[in-house]
Image (tube, rainbow, N blue to C red):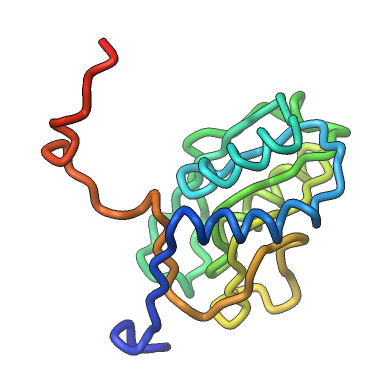
Length: 169
């Protein structure tokens, strides 16, 4: 296990995300019947992909593992998942921000396959050295890394910082 203090952190900007998307998008060979976005990390990259590829059938999956240790293959809890009828026989692009241990996205992949769907996995970052699945990988990814990635949408924000922003109400 790597000491978290020794792990290189990579803090991304929106410009960095644009470059990652420029690398990822040409790999995606649609058309897809639907996109399944894994919350919460997949929301931003999924939104960018569906806008660019004009995917209008958007589904979401929310998965939680109760184990605090990523090396443990604990059973997942599906907080949200589309019904099988929306997946059966469909080509589904499954999107998340990062494949770290791989537990979440492979769990979603398995459930889509069990419903009779045909998932293809896309992430911005793939961490092969952290993956619990040595014989599996995302179908599409923009970059491989060992770094601790901090996306621009993950940075700390407080409501106090937003007090100068005009209300839409």
